[in-house]
Image (tube, rainbow, N blue to C red; front, side):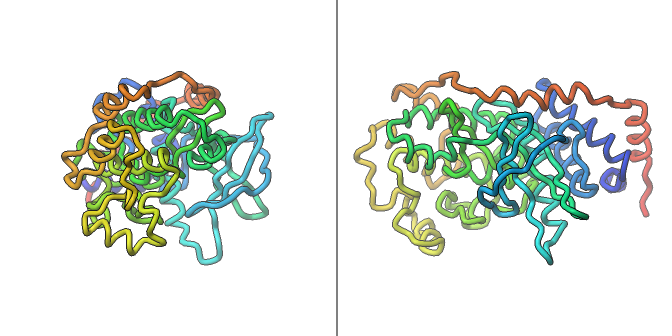
Amino acid sequence: MPESRKALRELKDDKAQGMIDWLHVILLRPALPGIWLRKKSTRVMYQLCKASDLYPHCHILTNVTIGPYRGCGGFSDIYEGNQGGRILCLKMLRLHPGTDIGTVQTACAREVTTWAQMRHPNIWPFHGLYFYLNGNSRRLCLVSPWARNGDLPAYLRANPNAPRETLIHDVALGLQYLEQKGLVHGDLKGLNILVSDSGTACITDFGVSSFRNDGTVSMTIGASTQGGGGSSRWAAPESVMGHPPSFKSDIWAFGCVCFEVLTGLLPFYECPNDLPIVIKLFSGELPSGSNTLQDLHPDMRELLNQCWNKEPAARPSCREILRMLKPMGATGVDRHDMGGDNRCLQAVGDVTIDRTKIREILDSVGSAEPC
């Protein structure tokens, strides 16, 4: 019913906030039946957040102190922050003169509605949202724990003796969790994997993620593909040919991450920019380039070659990858030390849902008539 969907997207103020809070509580239920329902509920909440610039109440943080500037991303500046002595990472949306506010709101709504649902030791935790007030302007910050060890490549440079197979196993566990949730990451690479204080690799950056019922296209939250945003080195051949991200393109990217971890080299390290990478992908060359991988364990070479199969359907599942890693001594170890991020779950319990009002909203939306 297009009229009902349109009416739902056009909810404002208290009605929009009430519906967003209700949907978020539903999405945090572990027993939510089926990927299809999660996909549909996420899409509605995403559209509401994007249209209203409102977000779940339980995620709004206060008493956060903004610290030094630490870097930047595609739509954001990174600041170190502090809340009650806890060091945080604040991803502050960047607004320049002429910035398309709609594009920024879309990027933020996409990441919040996806990331806030994730609860797993190998997914970097979402801590909440903070609105930084500067004069008449209000800038939204996505908040997470500060990663003292940095991203995976930086961690390995600083810790050359780190157990690389175990870190690869961590990433595979995180990717398996996303697959079980029906979520395609769409931009998996070493820079989008952070390492906790105890040495656990955790996937982050869900700005171009999308939900699927299976390996086919059913809904894409973001318009980007894995070949965009400077990520062509990790892109599967079908991605550079215009196909949207899929579970199988994530597996190709996982193989590229393994190559990064094991060799310290970027995929297609011999290429200075994207154009020769795309040409090589079209001609069937692998991300290992002239590196024959002969120094790697034979089982690891076989794993990479399977992840880089030209036929997406022939690439292994996460379950198969974990099985292949086991003989190499790569097993899961409980090294996770960021449990304070249950704050989100605790805050959800403090949210009061007026079910009578929600029912009234749903009834009014259901009875919407064509214009």
